[in-house]
Amino acid sequence: MIKKCTILLLLFLFISACASTPNIDVSQAKWVKSTQGYYNGIITSGETALPGKTQFFPIKNGTLEGTLAYVEATGVVKGSIKKCTVSAYLKLNCHWYDKYGTGEVNFTFNHNATEFIGYWNGDGDEKKFLWSGTKQ
Image (cartoon, rainbow, N blue to C red):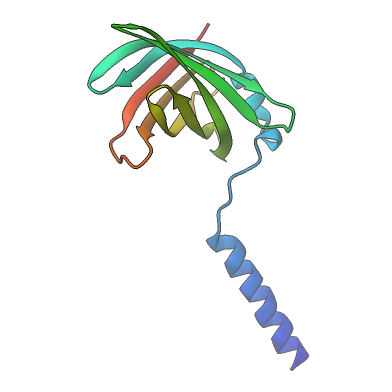
């Protein structure tokens, strides 16, 4: 009876572990270190591709944050990138914040983190927009 209970418990723990796919702590992903720095690229707003700059840097708790800036007709819009998590190898999921609101952005980097392609959306909006960059 105890052997059956132990097997059932182990099976339950295995299934539970497989069913949940938590994000990997950024501090544990060695490739994340190579993403640090500035990237020039495009941040699409609506249907318009705007010149943009994205920066990533580590913070004290071992996670990653950043800044964003893009040029629109009325001037430069600055914002921040926070709450970044590693979802898979070479993939970061973050939250962006600027004067227009907040939302999610998913970045996918090339093998040496010199370029990324990302897609962002506003909170509550399913439509996604391009966000790309090449390291300076």
